[in-house]
Amino acid sequence: MKLLKLVPDDTNIDFLKWRIPFFVVSILLIAASWALVLTKGLNYGVDFAGGLEIRATFTQSEEAPIPALRNDVEQLGYGEPVVQRFGEDNQVSIRVRLPDEVANDKDAAQQAANTIVSELSLKYPGFRLDGNDNVSGKVSGEFREDAFYALLAAMLAVALYIWVRFEWQFGVGGLFALFHDVSLTLGMFALFQMEFSLQIIAAILAIIGYSLNDTIVIYDRIRENLKKYRKMPLPELLNLSINETLSRTVMTSLTLFIALVPLLLFGPASLFGLTAAITLGLFVGTYSSVYMAAPMLVWMGVNSSSFVPRETVTDRQERLARGEL
Image (tube, rainbow, N blue to C red):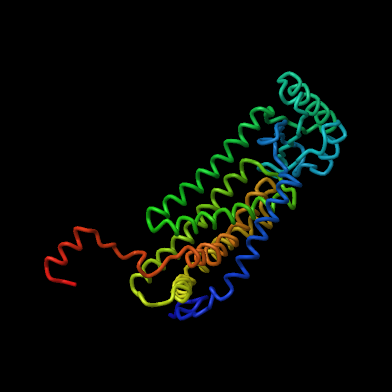
């Protein structure tokens, strides 16, 4: 039985031909993403903005009345809440941002929670409180700071790993590709004002891991070919390496995409942001490995001698002693 191959083994696509236009587009996308983050800001969830989360079950209904709940809570004067299914169809999570003076006052925050629960219990006889949490502004600020440091540490650790395993130029290329992926993900959340919570931090860390995996595969093939084809021009060698790993790249991305599509279309609303982030990361991570990480090596001065051991003074003296030129 002949195996199905989505990508032929003998592909010869000239990826590096368009490296400059794609690089310019990527720089513009990075700039636009950070402009959106700085101007529109991120729609922080309760984890990062501080506020109140109430989890409840509507025991007398098969589905929770989400639109009505959103309207009822908003009329209480706490702003526009985030109401999402949480588990079963009749279970919900109601998240409300509280003013700093209320969020930082434990008694005032609990009073706000009691008010919301009381109103919903009166209007919906089947309303059952499953739990509520309050995140103060101080704690949420610490969450944001810790999340930023986690992302920064992950990216630097990845760059250091690539530097040690290959050469410093590869570390720089890998770090720039990761910066590109993270920037575009943040830009998407700023543009569509999707809720940015700890779940999204987990998604971005997953994107970093996926992008690193894709980049390492291509870099490893580049290193092998640098040793094998010593006289081949670097752009041509990079094209060869990318084409040789293209089948693996496409199959890995396609497999993950097939798993993500049902979650994206039919998954619970509470997972939509995480799934959307990983789906975008799947595409930008694959793109950056090909058009960011690889072309950077041309501009960083990598050549065929990069992985050839350099002759030390002792080696030279021993070679001359043997009468070798």
